[in-house]
Length: 564
Image (tube, rainbow, N blue to C red; front, top):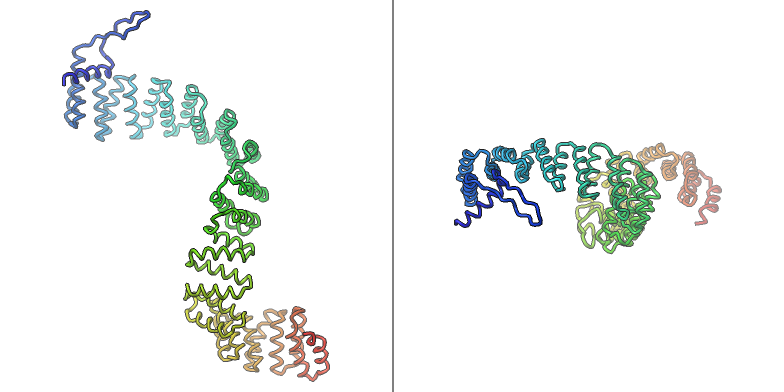
């Protein structure tokens, strides 16, 4: 016990710094001894009390330790160690105000003690007393002029106070001690930006680039800084320097692409991005991310689509895991009209996840565009099994079966799909219209008429439906007044539509108005496509015969209809 106490007494003497000792002059010569000091009994007694207080702290008796320190200060009011230890103790107990009070007193009594200043600086820092913190940090720098960390802490304090130029001045002092370094230059660059002086900020990086000519990142930073300042020619100079010094850099062509896009040269931007995508050092995931952000949606699908789609094609060919991005690639290929390849990608996706109704719709759209009615039918049937209440898949089945001339099956599928109801009135009208036409083909005229009426109830101004319905009625010679009214509406809306003119002529013929019928059938022939006039001429022959113009009818038959 006593050995330990003696040891602690000696250590306390070191901490106090022999504050009241009288130094003996040191002799000059070859051998130098440590100075001999005279220690007073009062100092040893004070140190003994300090050690006792410290031991109380170690055993957790904080209240007892505080009492001892205060008793010590009553006897020795200039005992700096006691103030320091009380500051530390109150800090650990969370009483920051008292911690600052005692730490300040310790610093005042021993202004050259760096440990006292460190504790005081920490307390000012956590209480955000910026002015006091700057003062203490400045004193620390003056005490330890060769320690860079103290300069950094002072610069941080100035920065927190918004005194950016003072922080720069501190960093300048650091450079005189440790030389020119990247961390300091980068900090100064940020500070110059903070004070609004981008020119000086740039000079910091220029100096770095000059000092490190083989380090391309500084050229990249300078290029980006010039881009921000819209100094595009200067930015290009640095990008070009990187490309020349390191042509295999995986990102330089991406940067050049962004540069050319910014200055409005879309073709050069595309050329540079394609170079980047052809670089094997740039991984496929990064390439996909770059393409996804380089063009916005409008650019990708419209204004820059010829470039964007070609770049997507480049990635498709490189991508070993294209299945993960099959929807993206499928969409790109669809928009390019490459429906066969798009369908393959969409099928790949659906093999993994068949629950996306939009992907099924896109696949069936590809089938339809390929005019592959068998695929439309099969894929629509598979989709309707997964989504039994979605009418669009029944509709597409019906369309494909109709085109395959499997009319009864088409009717059955469409009528089944129509029982689920419709969220979209346009789709409902399309259902009823095709059902009307199919039933008409099967001779189910009453059912056909009922479906036409349903369509017109939903879409009363649909002249295409009016035309088909009027033609159906005219062909049967039924309800000709209704047929005439509907057909008349169609030619008023589209007076040069050959189909509508032909229907109107046929309605007039059925009504016995042959002269008017002849006038309108000639207009239909005039406006019809040359390769699709057989129905017009057949009607023309019938209209001529009804007027007794047999020879003219024979001429028409020989000239136009015998060629069939």
